[in-house]
Image (tube, rainbow, N blue to C red):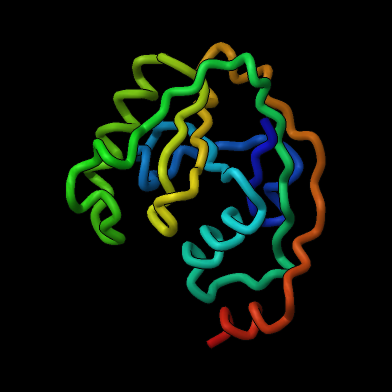
Length: 153
């Protein structure tokens, strides 16, 4: 399965997890957020950046996760109200932290809070099977300049 990540150029040459908290993990859990498509990865990145950093500062990472790897799936219909909250990630962090600590699988498939019918994939870098996930290539991020104009506003 191919996965995609938009990352600062300085951090795009290897699979790196700084351990910062995010929607599906609390601080100290070393995970990598990826998306099912380049457009979704870009949209997630744009919203997270909210005007900081411009497109020339980023690359697209193309990652291969073997289809044989176990994937834990979070069903959007089973999530409680408030899971998409942009200011409080505790609901999702509990789910992600339980998955991370259980070592149930190296991949957690989650609905995108931006577009719940699309999916992001969280990679547990501490899982023993993580070593089979490989960075295939890195390409420059070159979206339409009008999108960058939106970020500058």
